[in-house]
Length: 346
View 1 (cartoon, one colour):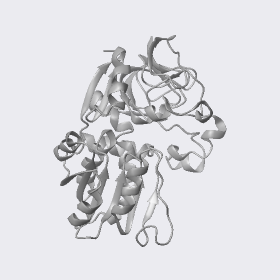
View 2 (cartoon, one colour):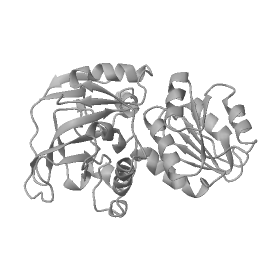
View 3 (cartoon, helix red, strand yellow):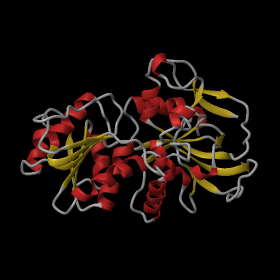
View 4 (cartoon, helix red, strand yellow):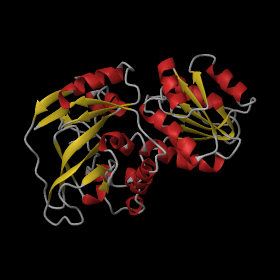
């Protein structure tokens, strides 16, 4: 079968031919319908050899949906041909966090060598993929798989981040979204669906800001040297009750700190290497700073329910599997408006 792999440190994604996988006991084989392209992949491909936590080559794709092709021994509760989404942050299934459905925070994954598909285990950017356990599959029902696949990360991750700040996003409050690309444009929709907050979007291009307005941002501000002052003006000098940074680079984390109101939340979702100093006088009083990772299985089900209700819709660009390297090039150049999706089987 064809697969898109990261094969050598510092290299580029390549389309290669690899053996067809077979499900072992307790596993599920999926015929992949769609796989999402994510900035996290680009970040991983920029790491030096000593920083990589897994061996190469690696089949990419930590966002995946497909149809059940075959079941390993002992698997029940699924039928061949069923359309499903893959819950990506696999855990041990038995520790205290996994027992809460928070496999994204599994306490034993590193110890046991458990890694997410596309981020250690073979991912979804292939014609077929093996899912380690049926509990990591969520039925799609009548949802469009191509428009749904980004929700497994680009929807789940901002949803998890926003839920933490819901008590502060009351009528009259403000939420700021920094970076309105793949995750950010979904976050804007989630904020509009889940809160009464005014949503201010920040990005570096007018094209991205146009998308932000289209999906529901009340205000769209160019992220330049004047951005902090502009947001302060829009909030009568108070700042935002919640700031979500989907870039996470040093300039944006610094900006996020400048935008937070007293008792506000700063949530750094992007993995651009930025940090934010915390300490008396470094930020307004009682500002909380957090850096979450993905979301729980229950939250993925909730995100898909929001999609069924029409509350969130991902802007996608589709590519065939042979065009996957081009999709990564366009993403790296900032030319993807929304989310790129690979269709491994056409």
